[in-house]
Length: 91
Image (tube, rainbow, N blue to C red; front, side, top):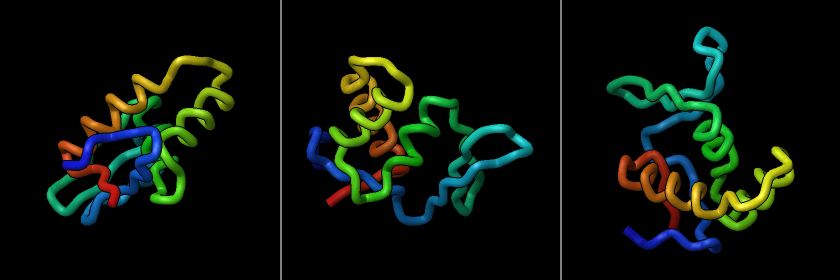
C-alpha cells in the first residue's frame, strides 16, 4: 500500500458503493457481502473521496465546511484505516 500524503487522491475501492441511507440516517458503504454503517465524520470524508480531490483538498474542504482547523491528522488516519479495509484506493 502506498503511504497516504496530502497529494494522494483517494477514491472508493472496487466492489464498494457509498450512498446515503435514509433508514439508517447516515452514509453507508455497500459491498457484496454486506454493509458498513459510517459515522458522520467518516461519511463526510468518504463522500469527498472521488479520485479527483487530493487529501489536502479534502482537508481544506472539511475545515471550511465545519469551520474548524487541524483536521489533517484525523483525515489521514481515517484514509489509512479505510485503505487497509480496501474501502479506499488511489494510484
